[in-house]
Image (tube, rainbow, N blue to C red; front, side, top):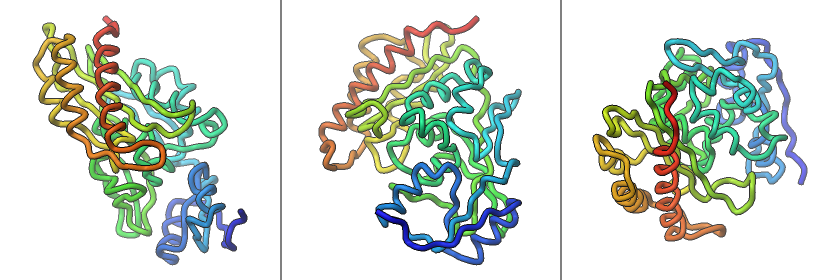
Length: 289
């Protein structure tokens, strides 16, 4: 397939990019890594009249690690996260999830901002953002605003971004001491989008789990947390019986889609199995002293 005709612009500042979006509402599309946008354009599923290339906006790049947590510029690539050794301690769940993103070639160009804006419900990064309570920084003609990750996606490939807004960065809160975590997903082939995925973390204090957070991708219309499962785990000792109860609740707490890859019942059962395995993974994980 060939692209439809479009105008190409590469602005030199965030303000210029916002101005182009505002002047062409609904017609101009941002391009960063292009790993999601270009295939949809090739299949004529997207037909923007203008591409606004962010390649020159160096202010949107970089990873900051500090007492306030981890901040990723919107143009941070998956390979940048993989290569940053600080994240092994500062946010191990994030680093583990990114290892599962597609293939090396895509991780070499794909960006965190592009993944969030595209909003595929099976994408790993939006799921981690929701699970960990991240905050997304965006800017448009009306100014800047912070959006909780749990409120950013409103359905498959749908977000609350206005036509003139772009993502600047995403902030993750500090990683908690004594945290245990795990990530599990299943796809038909290595590198494919997950049919279902689970990510979780909790603090261990005096032998019990505290403040558990369970995130889900693939088995839902958008990345989401499972508050019923979290309530089941909170304040209890880790063990086979409570994990089995949590897995059963996880399967009931989602409304999976039906598609050509798997029906809703299969995804629901798969999510329960992945939740059980992830909980056992986390329980076996040694907590750094």
